[in-house]
Amino acid sequence: MKVYPEISPELAEWIAAQAMFFSATAPVGSEGHINLSPRGLDSLRLVNPNTIAILDFTGSGNETAAHLLQNGRITIMLCAFSGEPRILRLYGHGRVILPDTRDWSSLRKLFPGEPPGVRQIFHVEVHRVQTSCGYGVPLMEFVQQRSVLLDWATKKGEDGIKAYQEKNNRSSIDGLPSV
Image 1 (cartoon, rainbow, N blue to C red):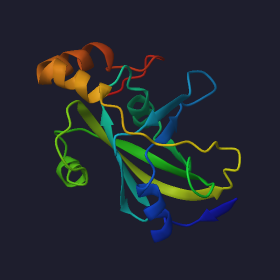
Image 2: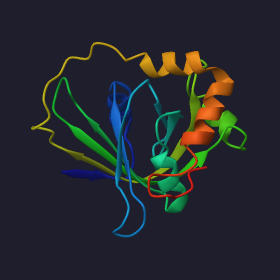
Image 3: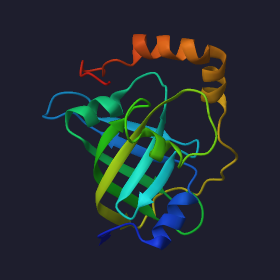
Image 4: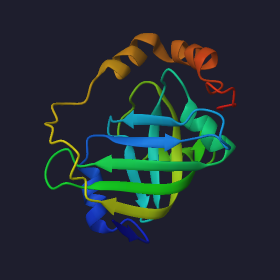
């Protein structure tokens, strides 16, 4: 295991080459559910050596946002599924950036295009960068990103997405507010 004060240019290049990553959050205390979300769709960007942004799409829940609003704690993990083995964990404190807030425009510019179903951006200040061996991570071949989520959001349309979010994304499974 190695710990770094920031995301180096070499690690930034490696991060950009990964097809997926995971985000983990949890509510305060021993009660409540820990959330671990797999993420793809080219939704992770380096803002600077100690800051990342995650473009978040509408989904079945909104646990990450609820936990960030409650306590801000988040860990991002990336694994090398091809090439040399590596696991990278980014420990940080995040906040939720909504489309109608001050920082939205500057962060949204980091992600090209206008994919359907974008819900929010997670802005994460990274305070610990840690690598480990990854020897136990299997070698896997990346085929392509799935289009199912984007197809679903396109079919729902903007009004349908807003109605879905209102019905399904206002609180966490533990009852914490998420927006």
